[in-house]
Amino acid sequence: MSYLTTSRCKLFYNDSAENDPSQADKPAVLFVNGWAISSRYWKPLVDRLAPWFRCITYDQSGTGNTVIEGFDPDFTIAGFADEASRLIEHLGLDKTRNLHIVGHSMGGMVATELCLRYRQALLSATILACGIFEETAFTSLGLMFLGGLIDVSMNFRNIFLVEPLRTLFIKRAATGHIDREYSDIIIEDFTTSNKAATNAVGKFSIDPEVLRTYTRSVLEIESPVLCCVGMADRTIPPEGTVTLFEKRRSVAKSPTRLVQFMSLGHLPMLEDTEGFAEQLKKHFDFAAQFYKKTTPLEPAAEHVQIP
Image (cartoon, rainbow, N blue to C red):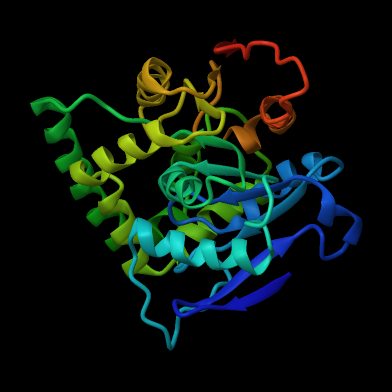
C-alpha cells in the first residue's frame, strides 16, 4: 500500500510488485473502479491473477483512502484519467508494451481515455459493464430520470445502511451471491464516498455528449478489446455492452471479443471470480500473442456466452 501525491490528490494505490519484486517484469494490469466504490472489491480477482500478472489497483479521487482535502480536483473523465496517468508513469508502465487496462462501469470511460493516451504501452483493454445506447427520445427521457434518481440517492444514501434497503441495494448490484465482507465494502464505500465527486460522476456518466465521446474513443483503441457484461445486470442495462461490441466489431481493425455471463449482475469479479478471471486471462494471453508477430495467431472467439 502506497501513496502518490499529485496535483489532484494524495492517491492511494496497491501494486503487487511492492511485496514481490519478481512481479515487476510480468505484464501489468491496471484496474479502474466503478462509481462510488474503492479498489477493495478487486482483491479476490487480483489474488487469482497474481501468479501471472502484476496487478495495480487504486482509489480514485473521492473514494476510499485517497485524500482530496487540501486539493481541488475536477471530477471529469479527463481529470480522473490525469491521476491514473500519473500513477502509470510513476510505476514506469508507459515504457514498454506490457500494460493491460481493465475498466468497470464508469471506470470503463476512464480506462478508454487511458488506452488512447498510452497506445504504445497498451497490450489490451477490457470494458466491463459500460455500454452505449442508440440515441432516441426514449433513452434521453430515461437518462433524465436516472439523473433525478442520482440526486435522490445521494441525498438519502444513509438509508441503505439499514435493512431491508441494504439487501435491496446489494441485490441490485449483484444478482449472484457475494461474500458478506464485500457487500459490507460496497455499502460502506457508497455511503462514505465524497458527495461532490459521486454526484459529478453519476451525472457525467449519463451525459449524451460524454457518451458520444466515449463511443468514438472505444472505436479508436488499436489493441484487442474485451467487452464483458453480466446479462442479469440491474444497475446498467446489459444490452448497451452488446451494442458497443457490435459497433466496434463493425469498424475496428483490431480484435474485439464479447463475453456474456448470462446469470450474473453488475459485479462479475465478485459473483464468479474464478470464471471472470479465466476470461480475463484468455484475453490477456491472446493480446500478448497478437503483438508477437512471429507467432501464428488463432482467430479470437468473437462472442462467448457463459450460463
